[in-house]
Amino acid sequence: MNSVIREITSRNVLVLFLTIAAPSVALAAAAPQGYFVDSKQAFARRPASVEKTDGDFTMSIHRDCKDSIGTRLLGIAEATYPPREVLVDFAIEYALEMGSDSAHVPLWWCDGVGVERIPYAVTLSAVEYYARLTENFRRHIFWGVGGTPLRWTDFTYRATITRKANVTVGPESFASVYVADMLLDWRYDDGIFTPVTRAHRIVVLTPAGKVLRVEGDGGADEDVSMSNHRRVGRDRRTR
Image (cartoon, rainbow, N blue to C red; front, side, top):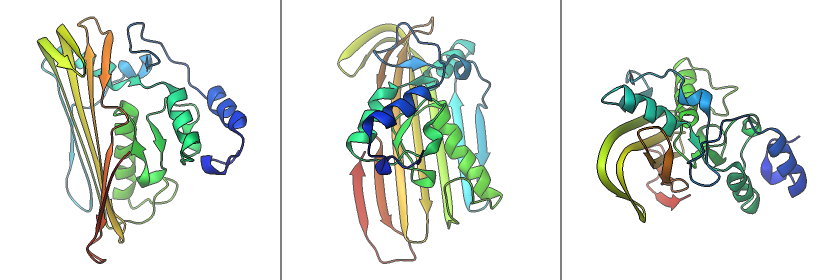
């Protein structure tokens, strides 16, 4: 089946493909409706800090957890995924391209392939995706990852989790909860344009690990300016 969604003319065929390809995940009973937690990702080991600032392809990853409880809860927050059908329907409605790698994985995007992918939600898979792109580019491997030789790329991810006696997130107020704050920034220069994509997510959890609220999904901001190798210009849009 063609991996480009805009080339698929049958909605029924597309939905069937993406539904069959959906991964097996553990549902979080207290998660917002339709959201689910990938239990394998929730407890997977991940680095607290990564710094690779030399060369043209750089990344900086920092997870700030004060204790083992925070580490466990941030893992759950990063493994919380939006409803698959919401992203599929959005891609169909706006004829967006998702790529063949949308099969067999929890979806955190509904638009874009390679370096042009726009995150719908900040998750562990999203962080690993941009980190993997960066690692390949640092090894001068541009084929097979959906990208082309670039001038430079820069990936930044910051995540913190703190205990809150009282907090208001969106329209809701919570007491005695943990709040995970996750910020992802991806930028690159292809010699023509210099896109900067930012996504921000807040997840509210109980100390026991139940997800009470997710805020920020679907609000990624893309700021595109002309490369220094082209004339000055800029285009700003929110996905």
